Amino acid sequence: MDWHPLRLTTPVKQHVFGGRAIAERLGRSGLPDGPVAETWEVSDVEGDASTVLDGPLAGRTLRQITAEHPDELLGPRLPSGPRFPLLTKFIDGRGALPVHLHADDATARRLEGEPNGKTEAWHVLDAAPGATALVGVRSGVDRDTLHRALLAQDFDAVMRRLPVRAGQTAYVPGGTLHSFGPGTLVHEIEQTSDIQQHAMRRRMEDGSPVPDHEWHANLDRLLDEWRPGPRPEFHPGLSVPSGDGVVRTVLCAGPHFALERWSAGPEMPLSYRFSTVRILTNAGAPVTVTAGPWTGLLERARTLLLPAVLGEVRIQGPADVLIGYVPELEHDIRAPLLAAGHGPAAVAALGEGLDPR
Image (cartoon, rainbow, N blue to C red):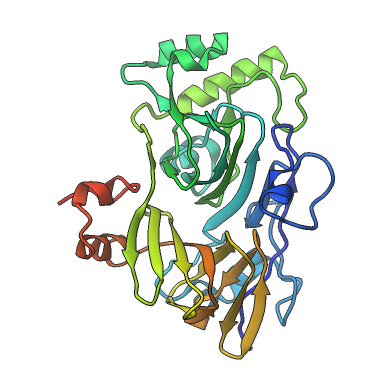
């Protein structure tokens, strides 16, 4: 089979906190009328799986391709499993997202019967002046104190409220209580999962009230899955000039995923090599992508899945793209950033698994 970059369907979520920023600020076409909270750019979540739009794999789901062609899609280094490992989204927090958390891996297996939890990261594309996020709890907050605050819906009494600025990224480990918005537009990368526990009295889908018995049960489960330790911070990322006007900026990294932003001027194409699957999302003007004999246009706020078997793509500048993947942390992240002159503490602050030695 002749492999090429894959265009996928993108499930859309019209939750009540969404607006029209994905269409109006990012220029995304083809969206339904009304509020659009999320577009799932690459998804293998049960019931919301992406399917291939064209080529010899048209109509196949991402899960089917992962199972049938693991080496070609994922690459030999990544362990093959029943699910594609990554989920990426655009999220429009026109209103505030619900305060919630996602279990970490061990808790997901223990309490949810799921193979993994959901660590995630937010790369801020746009933020209104004064925009903030609630990210983790304050030092010294215990379970009883948190429970009382959740019952009172007084989140600021126990949570850390951080300023949000375009261009910054927060790595949010599983088990971290969080929310962002209003006035915040992000690109999100995360483990493939949709498990979550909410603290709110109203449903995020339609704003309808949650019955008391259900709400109290939600709070109990949330507290069982909560991790008090993580206190994420927003960071601008660490950049590495790559010559010919190309700049690689590592936005975040951990054992589950890395997210990078690459920019290139008009003089030379951005030539990008890889040995495992990559998710290529366009954050700038439309660009032309070439892989072997295949050439296609990648519109703004659109995504291509790059199977590992391709090995290389060329992106005609000027370009401003996001690239997500499962890293080998020492080889892909730590060693090149240290070699570029970034300090061990700055590298470690990008996520997890990068602690100074």
